Amino acid sequence: MSRFDAVTISLRNSPITSTSDATRAFGEDPGLIIARPNRSIYNPVYFTVPEGFYALVSDFGRIIDYEGPAGKTETWPAGFHWGHPFKKVLYLVTKQAIVFDAPCRGVLTKDNVGIEIDIAIVFRVIEEDVKQFAVKVNPKDLEIRLQAQVDQGVKNLGREITTRDAYGLRSVRTTVIQTTAGTEEEDLAAAEETKIGRMTSTEDVELAQIAQEKGASSTQNMKTALNRAFRPDGIEITEVIIKDVNLPPGIQRQLEEKTNVESRNKAQRMQQKKEVQSITFTEAIQKLNQSNAEAISQATGEMDRDVNAVTVELQKAKADLNNTMEEIRRKAEIEVESIKQQTQLQATESEQLVKATLTAHEAQAKAEAQRIETETEAYVKT
Image (cartoon, rainbow, N blue to C red; front, side, top):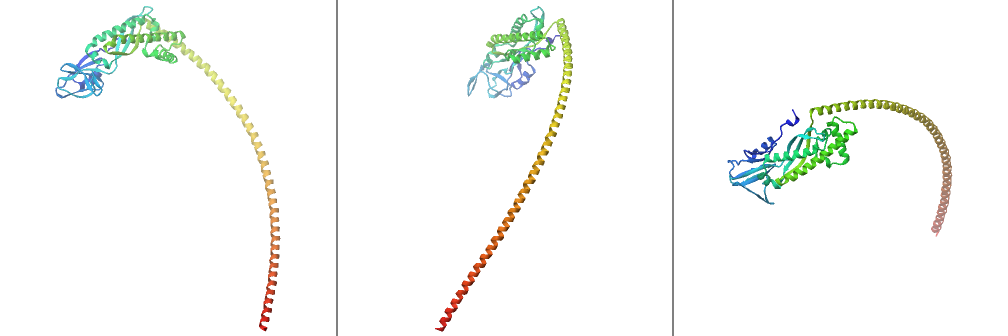
């Protein structure tokens, strides 16, 4: 069973029971792009517009604009709206991006081998053109036109690549060519590592890069052509992705065998490189250990010498300190003795001065007393 036998979505325009059932209906059917809800008879005075959809409202079957604070618009906002029973939501168009899977079979390569390429088209409905899209576009017709456009673009791509290059087309999208040079090389290398069996030769990697570049360029051209064809219908193509490539079984086995051989060779080279690196690392570690031991020994000897030198310096400093302290002690004793002698001399001089002062005062007092006594006697006699 081919990978392309998987169920693909079918674009549809379908009735639903009510606007409240829209989220469930669109969620269960990824191909549903336009829904036609019925108006509930139990709500005769209002109707609702669900979130996530463009809504077109009709009044007695005629589509009418919404008149809001910003003016008139074709689509109605989500929420409750007043209206009589014949005023209802005529169409609900999804705002979500739609992924349309377009498998292309019988694509001939440059070397005339038929391959299958699975393309995914991502598109959305343009808000300004919702009315035109809902009224004029038939989903089945849109599906056929999309498939035809994709078939033509893929066939043009097939004529530019070989069967061997086709593997490199997988997971190519239009955004690949917008990356920087360095990032692109890294992404291409990573893609080849995982999806082409980790190719190792420079030639294979270069071929894969060329295929990626061709695929990216082709998807970009395809996107441009699709937008040119479908923009008038209110559809914008946002992405074109090459999802997968299916080769004929015989060529598939050949590439797988080649990949397995290259993988084994790479494993052997990696093992040899690992052994060489192990030996190199062992020798480097031994040299490093020896160098460290010599450095430690040298540092230990230098440390011992430094300790001895410091010890001598400390002893010398201690002796100098003792001598200084002894000298200070002697000077202090001499100074103290000198101060003591000066103090005794000053005390003697002070004592002598006091005695002399007392003697003088005593003699003066005696003389004064004698004078007074003499004057008293003289007075008495008179």
